[in-house]
Amino acid sequence: MRLSAEHLELRNTVRRFVAAELEPNVERWEADGIFPAHDVFGKLGALGLLGISKPERYGGLGLDFSYEVVLAEELGACTSGGVGMAIGVQSNMATPALARFGSDELREEFLRPAVAGQYVASLAVSEPQAGSDVAGIQTRADKDGGDYRITGTKMWITSGSQADFYCLLANTSDGDKHRNKSLIVVPAKLPGVSVSTKLDKLGMRSSDTVQIFFDGVRVPQRYRIGDEGHGFRLQMMQFQDERLYGAASTLRAMERCIDETAAYCAQREAFGKRVLDNQVVQFRLSELRTEVAALRALVYDATEAFVAGEDVTLLASMAKLKSGRLAREVTDSCLQYWGGMGYMTETVVNRLYRDMRLVSIGAGSDEMMLGIIAKLTGLAR
Image (cartoon, rainbow, N blue to C red; front, side):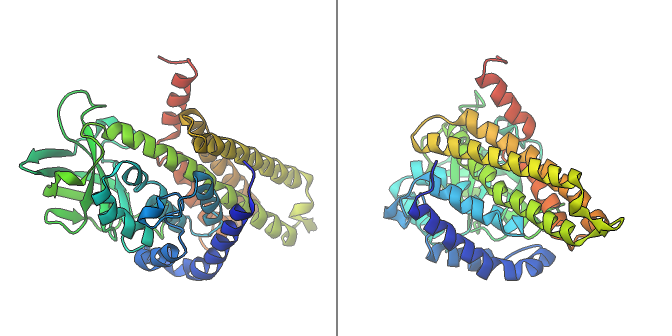
């Protein structure tokens, strides 16, 4: 995948936005444990950055997914991973299925304001006992007249306390657990919806994460995305957007980690010379930078195939696996060269170390990715 002049123009727009609108506020948002999603998303929406690949008919730019990858990369340079993650949930995790399979009426009511940044969207799939095991969710949406009556709980919901609607996966019938689920848009302010206090996390602290409870919540059946019983399949498709976006978002973050570490080692002295003058440090940082370049090639290859309409389940799973493991390796190695300062929460490398640990867990754990890869390459039945 080669970047065109239009890709570079978008990259510069995102880069300016990160520098002007995000970075000056990062420390405050990290301390508060939340950032003002409606305010930030409104500014992003005005620039068209929340609907890059969404249909023009609903306010999007109508571009292909390669432009979303450019967005993800540049947001990854923000020193608060939680903000970039929440933006990704809005643009590439909670709305792709709605954009592709929602009715015209549903897209007009929910997708258009999400693209404009007027609505905050959350993805509500995981549950306390069903994270990576999506087929094992227990939340039910039973038919009651022309409505669904929803009962259950969802866990680890990004932007959940600020959301205007949830893209929720629920069981809409009994039977085969891969064919009894549906995706449903659930407005957040309905009677019966309640939200926990913000969950206290290791990293991604500027992003509010909560548990959501649904107690007999009634929504019209017309709020269902696509056909009933197709929710598992649609969510698996939605995961491909999420995993590619997530992998892309680690690239600039890891490069920043290496750059910041090199700069610190250039001014830190030990035993009468700069830490950076030790060949072992030079070689390790060079090795890590090479690994990031290799991951970028994999992400770009997967993106090119995705844009061409190919099934990228294998490549996306590989990119997701590699990005999570490499993020752990890069941040751990770099933090070591910071010595005691690396252990202080005030340093960039410390925050990157904490924020990026999530990559190996969210959107399917490393073990889930390995299982998918094993099946698709014929190693497992």
